[in-house]
Image 1 (cartoon, rainbow, N blue to C red):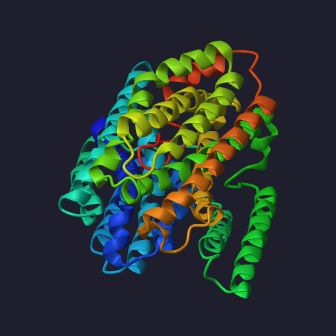
Image 2 (cartoon, helix red, strand yellow):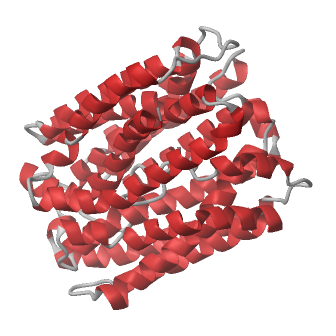
Image 3 (cartoon, rainbow, N blue to C red):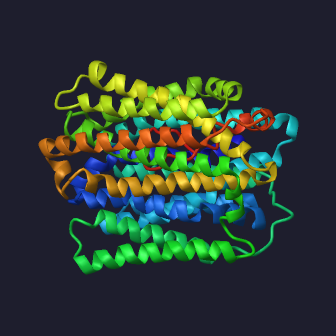
Length: 476
């Protein structure tokens, strides 16, 4: 059962860590501009962020194994379409289909373990699930770079097909079905549609701002804002909303989600642009660019548990303040990376400091999300935080090139991209700093450490998925 669930969730994790490494080659092979590369990342994130809460609810109602297997098959079909895409339009559409599959399989992966393994063994099972997933995250950049430099970028997607073919029969044979007996058949389809449509229109406006006409751009922005307001209105009035407004009555939960928005927006933009900088400006191969991310992942694997213990002892306020500041410092160190940059002198220090920032930040953030609500709503709280992290990354990947002044063909010119990259890193560092300020001003240490202790075994697996950026910590 552990192998089946790791294979399923690992497909989505590997896909997130290798696709960015392939972006420059995708652009060259398909004759695509920067906007297409942004959509290649964001089409996946858009459907994933919009539907992940619905995916969890479907599993609770109709069977977690059934929805998990459906998600794996759906993800594999989307991957196949990505791998054979004849042009950029088909690739972007197939990425959106992949996101739907990811929204179906991701919530069920951990829920199957939680619902099928007895309580005294569950902690060790979750730890094994998390550790195996971490190994996948570490292997991802190497694998992605090797595929791009070797058989080609299409195999980044095609590799998911045999993985799914191994996962599905294993899940059907060895994973018992489980449901939530209290789940009902009503789903907030309207809320999910409004939220996804609002994100889609705002993302379109940000990505296409350089080329769209004024009326089209105005309609996209206005429509996105109207749909966002409608989403809030619908969620406040429904008896069974996808995002219950009452959960934000917890000031701690609201505060941590604000920090999440800032941190994961900055991370989304950082990892999206860094792999391009390393290949376009520094002249790294795809394999070398993917391997450059390894220190960050290695630090997360080695030190996240200790960081969670430290957060239990001193409370979340200091880690959630210091972590984003370290990430901001690592971001500014990337300004040293230019043409013919030295890995040891220029890239490694930035990745090391960024990794230490993530180590300091991620586990306490996730523990605090889970501890800020009643235990019965921990799954919902984690799902909302998950969606917030993905939406933040989505909007950052859309907005950052515009804010940095990148043109449609910037990634084809080392000089142009290097200049805009410096501006973008300053923006990312600023957003990290805002996250630190928000944490210091709003996050408080709970009066009891019991809730934190109960959530500790989950801290490394519920952190929001950094789907857009490669080799970033997976938040699931």
